[in-house]
Length: 230
Image 1 (cartoon, helix red, strand yellow):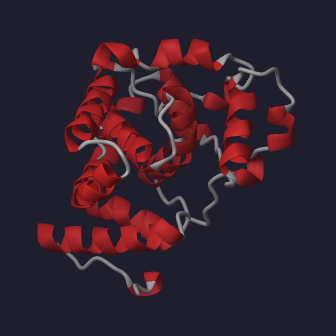
Image 2 (cartoon, rainbow, N blue to C red):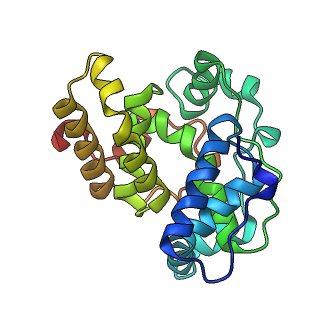
């Protein structure tokens, strides 16, 4: 069993070392998804340059600069799910709260210290994971989770998503046994990737301002139609 407190990345690590440490971080995050050390370390292993590029993009727009300055959060400690669920059915707030209730899970929490805008973008990406399930319509089963990773890879170029997809390919026979053929599984991943590529970037969206907006409206604005990606 991996001890998350002992994981670290040496100076000037090789690609093999990055992948090995990232794999160990994933093992921890499967059971402890908010582990601050592994959450930050996997970003450093795989996505430091990706998040740095996103920060640069944000710095060239008024909305992006404001997001980086104010650093809104979707952590559980700032979300009132009871209030969100009191909103009209079909709104983002209502559907987001119902998503947690139906799946019997809680909002993202972490004690990660934000030392830079890059740290914030990494945290924001992880916070938006559950919202993306609501917006894209991808399920929370094994296939749906991989579809969402493929979508994020297409939309943002997140290398962690690519790594998770690669690792999941070793479990393909488990997916086949669940009733979905291998070719259908791969087709759905490819469709999700293309859908992400065709959709506007989601990470600079201030979702906290859209709790009363219908999910259908946001989906039309932010997500390419899934049927056109098949």
